[in-house]
Image (cartoon, rainbow over all chains, first blue to last red; front, side, top):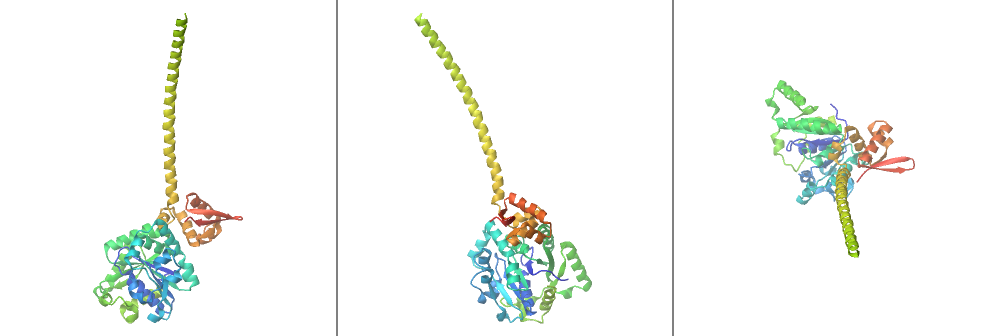
Length: 258
Length: 129
């Protein structure tokens, strides 16, 4: 299954499904494969990419770009050398300070309109002018302004879900009531599946088809729960540290779908 | 005789006064009714202005976009991407007819979300900030 589109939003209905882990490792893997990637942290309520890229951060935050205080070029930083990828890897960070988070929480509707229009301009600035192959947007969960804006501005959304009835049901409703209104293409990745050795191939097929049928979203694939991935130091990118790990190989498969 | 005339004149004046007072009372009633009607008109105008202001004050953010009918949402989204565009430009984005987009854009102008400016023969549309 080939994902068409250049701006990919990584979203979820619930929090804690593994969006940031997936988006970061996907971005790094694509860059390792020679693609020019720009990864943006649009989770303004719980910024986390700062931990990975803080040593190389630019003068401005993505918050400044969203509010119109700077252009996108001023808010992204080149981390290609740091990670040694073949293709370019750039990152844009959300401001992790409490004040900045509060400011985003109490933002006005006019501010949100500006934010949406700024995100819609990314296609022209980052893809056409700067020549990135893909822009990956790490979002907040659920239907908050920042995540809705990110989904609307994207070409396709990768929904990271877990094998949980509440998440599956919530995802289905989110897709029906929001994604479909904006005619957004989406795919679902089921994350944190208990170690696949516990499932026979037949059980796995049944699980996947049940998931696809219930969520009503095409399934990109599943990602088993690897304890060593969970235990890993989040200040590094796992796929670059452990290129032969099954997790990395599965991420590589997803990257090829792009 | 004179006294009778005077008394009659006083009586006449008194009748006239009563009549005037009655007329004044009637006038006061009428003014009161008019006053109440003007109040009603002002109230209803305020309410209709509030509804218009609600639309005018609602920016075209993602929540507003979600509330639009599908056809207008598609047009609004295309214009949001283009920032400033003529109907033909929007039609290229949406793959719909220029005349159709022109109608939708004008609807969005009427709703208060979009501004229209003529440059020569061509009308350009922008999202209202």
